[in-house]
Amino acid sequence: MKTLSTALLAALLAGTCAAIPAARAQEQTPQLAPATASPERIILNLTADTAHEMAVTWRTAPGLAGIVEYAVATPGPDFVQAPMRLEAKSEDATIATEEDPEFHAAYHSAVLKGLVPDTVYAYRVGDGTRWSEWFQFRTAAQEARPFRFLYLGDMQNQVLSQASRTLRMGFRTAGDVAFTIHAGDLINHHNSDREWGEWFAAGGFLYAQTPQMPTPGNHEYGKDGAARAGSSVTGQWRHQFTLPENGPTGVPEATETHWYTDYQGLRLISIDSPQLDRNAQARAQTIAWLAQLLKDNPNRWTVIFLHFPLFSSDPDRDNPKVRSALKPLIDRYKVDLVLQGHDHGYARGAVGPQGPAADDAGATYVVSVAGPKMYPVGKLDWARKTAERTQAYQIIDVAPEELRYRAYSANGALLDEVALRKP
Ligand SMILES: [Fe+2]
Image 1 (cartoon, helix red, strand yellow):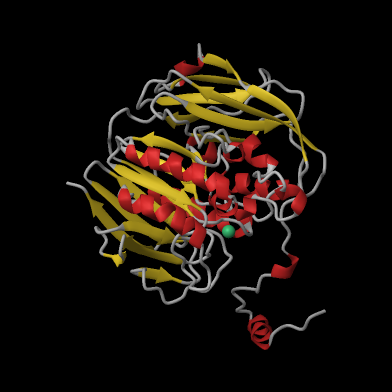
Image 2 (cartoon, protein in one colour):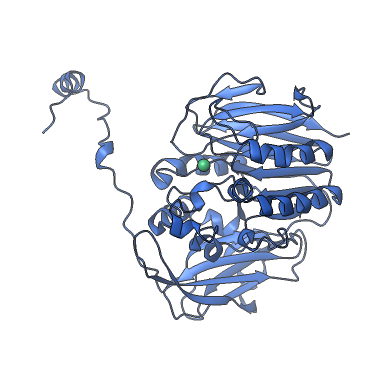
């Protein structure tokens, strides 16, 4: 048995012990539970038509049907009288997870279509007998209109124990957000169902009422040969999310990892940066796809988000292949914001075609981390603001003439702020 520290012993004897050091070594993540008969891990995703559609995905024990009931929400309980009904795509899947080489669950996904823009809907999911509670979401307006979204860097480690507070404080501060983006490494071990369970527990019902939009990081891919042979994200990714399937043609491994959507005057693009970094052929196709998206863009604002940063918060970490693939397009088409992860620190600055620039003379690049794993942050020529050992969440307010970016540390203090204007 370890001896008590002198300070702790003195405090105990004096009866003034306010805090006992946490036994971190004994910390345990929640036990892995089998999928249940009741719907669980319910999550919304945006589709490519944000004004008229919404995707919902959940899982249950195998062998159960998947049904969505939905209706325009009313002030009182009347909406439950005659909801619309949609049968989900249900798949009894066997996934090789870290904990169980033959993990069985039924994954259900449905895209609600023909919705009215800028309208609050109520919905529930189930098998016809066992139902979730009714959740509510709002469809996007068809035209450019002010809204806000949340951006989180890597949650990755101690996802439920210590990363959840960042996400939850983000929701508290931001209030009514249109969606949340996750810049990769949502979990640490790509196929650990226990860790994915932590990720879903961290967001709980928030994921069922606000669309979550992830891009994969290196930790969503396996490191070993077998898992990596297919160059594909873990089995959980495509089962758990229903993301737009509008990535580059000819890169099937990047289905639901490269994608884009438009939301009230903003074009949002997810770049699967591990895929981009690894595969030269896929890189060429992705560049062509992105160039087209940026060229034919009717939106005033453009945000690209990806895991590997083009500009790092640690001088010893660099992603030259990702930078050389993307930066010429970002410069040419004047992308406004590039939101990134991977480096476990905080940095924000603008970089133009010639290098570090004033805020309005180049794209604004951000590196941020939501979870507790911390790397050193170096002296950076490109960044105007840096922070070390800081878990952060970001709120971005988008309006036709101004995009206002704010970063907050996990305890709710304003960390950084910049406004971009397009009169
Ligand atoms: Fe990473």
